[in-house]
Amino acid sequence: MTRLRTAILISGRGSNMDELIAAARAPEFPAQIALVLSNRPDAPGLAKAKAAGIAVAAVDHKIYAGREEFERSLQIVLETYRIDFLCLAGFMRLFTPWFISQWRGRILNIHPALLPAYRGLHTHERALADGVKIHGCTVHFVVPEMDEGPIVAQAAVPVLDGDDAETLGARVLAQEHVIYPLALRLVASGAVRVEGNRVLGALAESDARLVAPAGDGVTNG
Ligand code: GAR
Image 1 (tube, protein in one colour):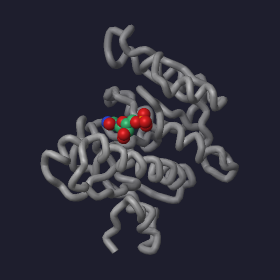
Image 2 (cartoon, rainbow, N blue to C red; image 1 turned 180 degrees about the vertical axis):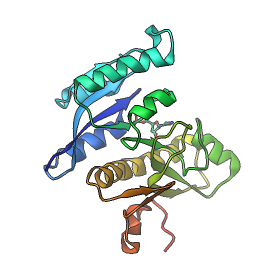
Image 3 (cartoon, protein in one colour; image 1 turned 30 degrees about the horizontal axis):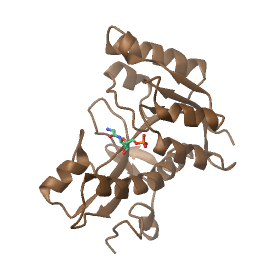
Image 4 (cartoon, rainbow, N blue to C red; image 1 turned 90 degrees about the vertical axis):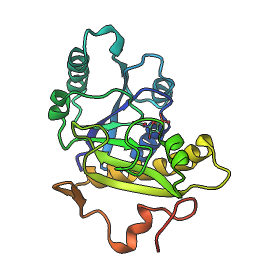
């Protein structure tokens, strides 16, 4: 089995990165984590990845004149490591259409909300302010428009009376850690196909608990 050479792009602590690295340790996992790359040289996730024996690199966006110059450097690093596939995991920079076109169909992102609700930042605060009863997270293919693109997996969690952004965010994050490795496995193994804006072939009805995990998560069954 050829395992997809995958780079995880981070900007911060890298808890989703940890879960992807752990999942990819299984020999039958269809992706290998060949690189962790950050736009912030001081991202705590870099040290963790290094300790886990993964190659790491930093391309500091602040030293570049513009977005595209930054991305050209990223691209060189990714090509140097012969990367086939990208997972954005708390990577807090927007990409230009040029960069996305290099990686079309080969780049996933995790977002801390049930897209298409709550694109952008401060998703937990905004969900609480709106009084929604269900919140969650989404893994999707990246397209030029921010927080859009075909959805691979989602998990829902309840919003509880005593919640603040921190408690709600922690409940969502626990589900992010479940669905990101699942989504990478589905895509890297070729189990799913994209038709228009839909990702098909992932789940039988009986598997629906995988997209809306039981326990802390909400199921509709
Ligand atoms: C995660 O909650 C992820 O969904 C979010 O940043 C956090 C990173 O945490 N991503 C975004 O908001 C992207 N717009 P982590 O570094 O511990 O994985």
